Length: 373
Image (tube, helix red, strand yellow):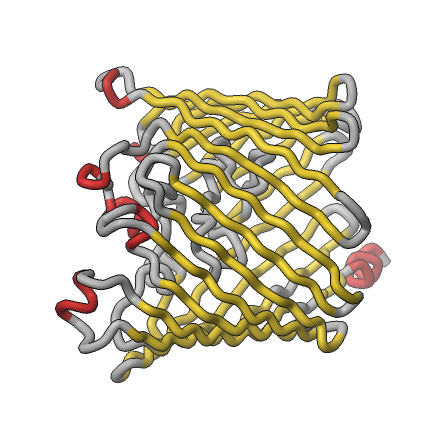
């Protein structure tokens, strides 16, 4: 009887999406690519993706979840912002495989999430490749050291999974303590961290600490309302006891406001103490490898969203590097043609002097078609 009841509790939920992402890019003049790999500045890229996210509920408090993706990239050159080769520096084993590579086509498949979660009365534990999302920033999250994402990479929808053991202890409806052990290829490269979160006077507050990439990091964040506007901020101090000259702070401060049921806007500033102030000092290879998200120190960004019609919305955003004065503007229009189908037409315009940060990013015209199931 017990076995029959256990089997009856099994519930398989299957979902996912299909996505096609054609992009026409205009590469910067005098770049390495245009001088050595292409005879013109125009480049067409198409990224097609199929993502499957089955979840098996063993009971009301236990579940397995898998995020599996197959994608195919067409490009005349290798493009680090679209590739999915290998594993990130938050993963211990490679679950990324080459299907085929022929001419300008390359196809891969990989497992981005694979975890088991068990929830008890006041505690939950998650084992496997998972998403660990810390921080409150809308664009940047300095305290999110397990699953960071480059905000300029408009082709990226999900944060990469981290191979980890995480546990969360609940002290009440708004108070919890989360502990994370992030495994990597070598045991001495293991990352770990803790985050305590609570609510005080209607403000969400948290403090975190841990070891990431052989550096000690401590930080905190807050989020709440000031009159009718939302405000938030977070900061970290990262230091290496053996190299004190490499210590740095990173923080953000931001606000957003819902002007009407149709119009929403936000503004956010970032200070990135790890960045450089001179373009000649930029660590380009670290950006390509995903070790850092920005090259310089001072940034400001704004975004707005306007609902033209229940099925049509417009978005616009801009980011400015306050040090080298480079930046980009991203404008898009989304049409929800069906309840499970959306089409987005957008353009990303970049500007800046040679070798400035956003000079490396091409101006891009793109179409994003996404079908959910």
